[in-house]
Length: 70
Ligand SMILES: [Zn+2]
Image (cartoon, rainbow, N blue to C red; front, side, top):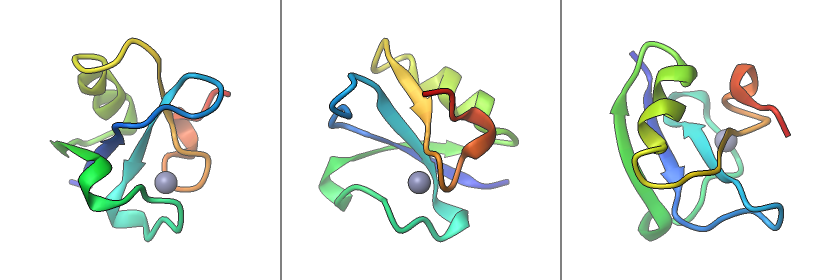
């Protein structure tokens, strides 16, 4: 199962992006700006758990594209 993190910092548009660490994303936040979400079968499940921290959550366009909405 892939390992996911969410960015502590919001995008300019207000969403906190969820990244899949197993997809070699070039747009990962600095390690100290990452909150570990653990292993999830799907990015939908990772986004759901990121909502425990932030109201506005979106999948990264590059590494969690199935969950990218904005
Ligand atoms: Zn990403």
